[in-house]
Structure formats: C-alpha cells, structure tokens
Image (cartoon, rainbow, N blue to C red):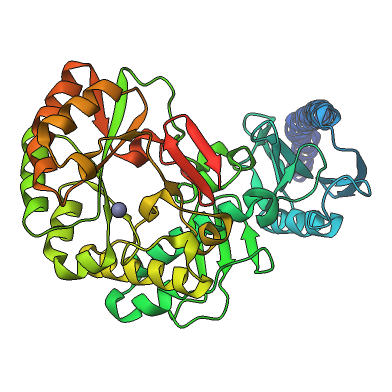
Length: 488
Ligand SMILES: [Zn+2]
C-alpha cells in the first residue's frame, strides 16, 4: 500500500494547495476594496467640497460685481450730465460706456472717443482676468464759471487672493474746459474779452520774443513793428496756457505760448483753473499808506546819477518816465536806473504833445522811444506818460500802453527851488498818490532826500507805480492815482 500512501500524500498536498488560493485573494481584495472605497469617498468629498467652494466663490464674485456696478451707477446718477448707458459683457469682463446725450457735452467729447479710450485700457489687461471698465465723462468745477470735462476710464480688476475688485488708476483722455452757464467751450475771445486786454497781451508777446531771442538787438525793429494781434487770429485756449498764432511778421516767431501768469491782468481769471494761476491778484490788505515818486524827462548824465545815489541811500524805488532821445544820449544811466530796481517807462521820444500829432507821428514817437529804451536797458517800457499829460483816445490806441498820469504836482519844473519842492509835496501828499517830479533839475535832486524823509515820517511807503497799481494797469486807461483810473 505504499503506493496508496504516496497517492494519498500527493492528493493531500494537492488538497492543501487548493485550500490556500481563496484565502490569499481575500487578503488582497479586502484592503483593495477599502482603498478604492476610501478613494471614491475622498474623491467625491473633495469634489463636492470643491464644487461648493467654487459655487461660493462665484456667488461672492457676483455679489462683489453687483456692489461695484451699483456704486458706479450711483456715482453716475450724481453727475448733472445726462447720459446713455451701454453695457457689453465678454467672458469675465464687463464694459460700461456712459455717453453724453445729444447737446450735453461739446462734440469733442463723443461716444466714439469714450469707446476708443475704453479699448485702450482693456488692451492693457489680460483678457482672462475679471474686470469692470467704465468709460464716462468726468466733470469737475474749476471755478464758479468754469468746469472741466474729461474723458476717463475707471477700471476695477479682480484680485484673486483678496477676492475683491480693486480700483485701478484712472485713465484720462481729452480734457475740455467749458462755461458752467452755457456748456460752451472757453475760447480766446471769451477769455480775453476786450481790445485793451489784447493790447496788453501784445506787449507781453513783444517782450517775450525779445527775451527768447539769441540776438534781440537784431530783431528789435521787427518786434516793435509786430502787427497787432486781433480776435481774428487763432487764439487757442488750453487748460494751462494760451497759444497764439501771430500775424505775418519778421521776428522769426509765428506762434507763441503764454502761460496764464504772464497775462493775468489781461484775462478773465475765473475762466482759468486756479491750479494754473499763481495768486498774483492785487492785495487790498496793504498795511500802511503808499505813495509813488515819478521822475520825468530824463535821463540826464549829471543829475540822474546823483538822484540814483540818493534813492539808493534811502532804499527807495521810483518810476522813471524816460525820453527816447535822452536815453540815446545817456544809455548807461538808463541801464543803472533799471539795474537799481526802478521802474522804467516811456515819456515819448522827443516830448511832443501827442494829441496834436498825426497817427503816423504818434507811432513814430512811441516806437523810437521804445527802441532807445530797449537798447539801453534790455526791456520795453510797459507804460507811457504823455508829455504835458495830453492824450486822446486816438493817440492812446496808437500808444497801446497804460497811460500813467499824476495827482500830485511838485511844481519843481516851475519853482526850480528845492525848499519849494519840499513844502509843496508835504502839503499835498496823499495815500495812493502819484507825485510828478523831474530828474533833470538840480533843485529837484537837492530836494529829494528831504522829500523822502518827510514822507517816511508821515508813514508813507514809497513804491513804483506798477507796485501801487498791483501790476494790473491796462492800455487805453489813464491812472491818476491808486484809486483813480479813467478810460481814455
Ligand atoms: Zn515831460
């Protein structure tokens, strides 16, 4: 039976081995199942979680978007400008254009320009980034009479970390200043308004051309003969300056920019944004009494330098009405007058009675004096005192400068006596007065030291005519004193 045994053993072995198989696969299967189960559970858990989070994020985004859109609309509702709203959505970006209704803004601020500006801003942004872009006309009141309207785009970009819309720096486009009352654009004409202001600006232009020239002496004739600007010339208003196309001329300059501070006396300052205007308005809150010493008919090579010494010693500035022919004789004296800080003005070339001359003669008297004074000092006289105080409308128009008269006559030309000059001035001195004297008389020079001391003792501050008038003098106007201005 050993064979049997052998058999049975083998079959036992066989039995044994067929018993082992199912138990092994169970050991593998169960954990595997558990792992799969775990993975599925976890997967669906995270999937659901992610889904919920995503949903919440979207809701949060939508809420934030609504909030911003509401704010934008509220802001827009506050504007006085009537607009039409157009919204376009592209993926995660919303674009809104508030374009002005017809007649609500000048044509320069059109819907097309708003859209262009909007596209410019959008191009800067990654198209997959969520954002809100608002193109509108930004309005701001600059003065009571002036408002500023500018094309602008506000953009709000979504910040993924903070989960908020963040406002970006505003993009500004074209900007216009318009009149509050009519909504019309400000023009050169509305800004300058009058002929006398144009004449004032003419003088500023002439001096500026000379200041900018490399060799001013070569163009002085062309500058003095610069045809007068008129409202027919192109005068472009922009926020910070005025640009004037000059009439045909031989100065080599065909257009000029003037900043508003340069021409402040000759413009309606409430039509300029104050940020482009320094406060140069005359202050009425001057402390004490003011008086202006003026000296005519010079310079004289003997007496004027002596006078300058006294003025220097007393630390006083005056105004010199210079004769062109004398400036030619003593240019160095004119130069000293200017360098000492005194004001230089014109008294014509040869001391004629201007209102008795022809137009051509008046023009020649003014131009020749201007030229001589310029060649001596480098500046053009801003104002003129007509010989004998004689002026009429016609000659004042040709002169084109403020006319400075006087209200206190020292009578030095008559008395030629220092003591008489001193007592006359003492008797008639008044606040805001302009005192007439002549620096060609030795007796006047002898009197001046005491005149100044006496005036100081009476509490006067001695200033130049322009200082006293706050630099606000205008052509076609006569000034007899601080508060006595008359149209010629
Ligand atoms: Zn005179």
